[in-house]
Image (cartoon, rainbow, N blue to C red; front, side, top):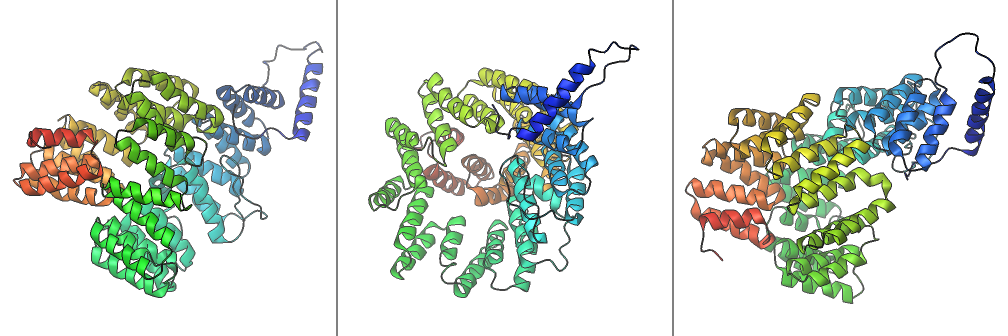
Length: 577
C-alpha cells in the first residue's frame, strides 16, 4: 500500500460514470476498424485500483499514461502518485505534463523541480525554480506533508522556504543548493532569505557561500541570531577558529538567553574537548539550565570516547526525569559499544516506535546480524517498511547497506535487483548497487556501473567522488581518479568525504606529504574514523610518526570498533594495544 491520498468521492463518481458511458458506447457496432484510443478515465480507475492493491509501479505508469491525454487535475494526481511510488520515469512524464498544462502554477512548478532534482536534471530544476519565483502565489493554505502539495503562498520568503522544504524532502542539500544558487536574486533580499540560503549552503558543503550569505544578512540585521549562527558554523568549517570563537562570543553578548551555548558548541565542533567542558561548567555556575548543561556534558563525553562518564551523565538525566528519546539512544549505543548486546537491544526496542524508530531499528538489526540472527534483523526493518511504505526505497538501501557491511553482498545485490524492478532507474538504488559491487570484490563491475550513472549525470559530485575514490583505492587510472575528485571538490568544496578522497588519491600517487592537508581538513570537519585512518597513514609515511600515533589514538577513543582504524594501526604498530 502507499501513502498517497485516495480519490475524492466526487471524482470517483465522475470517473465511474465515464467508464460506464464508455462501456455503453462499446456495444454500438464499429463503422471502421479505427485503432482503439486510450480512455483517460478508464486508465485513472485502473491506476487507483492498482494503488489500492499495493501495486505502485502499475499505478504510477498507468497514471502517467492517463496524464498525457487528460486535464491538469489528473496530471497533478499522476505526478503525486509517481513521486510517492518512487517511479521516477513515470513521475517525470507526469510532472512535465502538469507543468505544460499549468505553466503558472506554483504547485506544478514545485513538483517539476522536485522530480527534476531527483533525476539530477539541474538545468531543468533551475528553470522551474526561476519560474516558481516569478509565478503568482495561490491563496494561502497550509502545507500537506510528504508527497503532498506544498503551501506555496504567503510572502516571497515564505514561498521560498516552502519550496526548499519540499525539495529537501526528496533530494540532498547539494542538489537543492545547485538548483537555487545564482537563480535567486539576493540584491535587496531580506535577512531571512539570506540566512535561509546560508543554511542551505552549509548543508551543501559550501562554507564560502554560507559565509557570504550570512555576512550580507548580518550587515542588514546585526543582531540576527540565526544569521550569526550560520556565520559561526561557516568559520568552523573553513578552518578559521579565531573568527568562529570571536563571533560566538559576540553572539552571546548580543543575546545572552538564546546564545549562551554558542561558545561551547564551537569548542566542541573544533575538537577542543577540554575548553568545551570548562565552558559548560562555567555556564552551570552561572545558573544556566542545569538539565541542558548536563545533557551537553554527556554528549561531549560520548563524542570524545569517555563512555563511562557519558553513561553516568545520561543515567543521571534519566533518573532526574529529564531524559528524552535521544538519551535512551545514547545509553543503548554505549551498551552496544561496551559489548552488552542484550541491554543495547532492549534499549533500541523501546525506541522501535518513536521518532527515532528507523535509526534504532537499523542499529538493532546491525547487532543481530553481527550475532548471526539474520532473520530477526531483517524482520525489524521489514516491519517498519510495512508501516511506512512511502520510505520503501530508503529502507531497501538501508537493508542492503547492512547486509553488505556484514559480508552478505550477494543477498544485498539480489535485494537491490528486486528494488530496481519495482522502482526502475532509481538513482539511489543504482548507486547503492555500484557500491555493494565494490564491497563484494567485483571492482570492474562497480566501476562500469558508476560510469554508466555518471554518463547520465555528468556533474553529480557524489558520483564523481565515488568513481574517483573507487579508482584510487584500487590503484586504477590514478590521474583520471584525481581529475574526477577535483571536479567533485569544485562542486562541494567542504565535503569531508571528497576532501578525504583528494588526500587518498594524492597518497596513492606517491605524494604522502601533499595528502596530509586535505585529510587533516576532512577529519576536522567530520571526525570520521576512516578519514583518521587515511590521515594517520599519510603522516606516518611522510615521516611524522608521533603525529600519526596521536591521530589514531584520538580516533580510536572516539570509535574503537572501526575496522579501518584497527587495520591501519595493526599494520604500522603491530604491538599496539
